Image 1 (cartoon, rainbow, N blue to C red):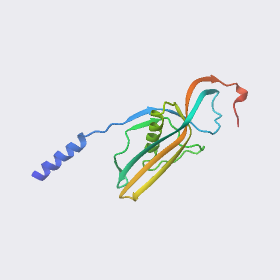
Image 2: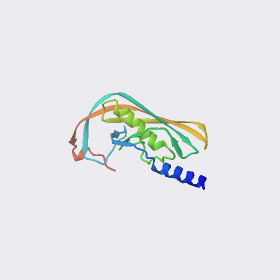
Image 3: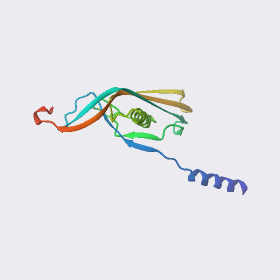
Image 4: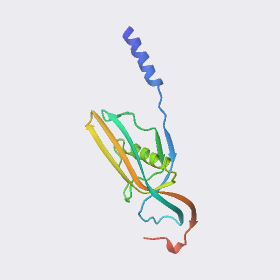
Length: 153
């Protein structure tokens, strides 16, 4: 009976503990040509920036440590095909972009390049480290582009 009571108390404590995370909206751009808009941004291009995030994963699904601040709205691929994010890669990319932009004073990362490294024992304990490198830029303003400058099919 004592073991059952201790088990119930442990379960109640597990469900009463919460986590917190912060998502912040950032813009990103790639060096590819986009033909879907008639608005252009005037950018003040700055210096190269870099951000790194890491997380440890136990049994391939329990995250230990890691970041709690993320950048929303950051593209993770320069290709036309969407990238498939299996595992913690999407959160790591978002956290690395947040770190790169938050401390740099820039609004966007131009041509972001993500590198994810994995170490440890597969399925038992793994450590993922993501580094993003790109060029920082500030948005000075937006302007309308003439229709004949828009690329078509």
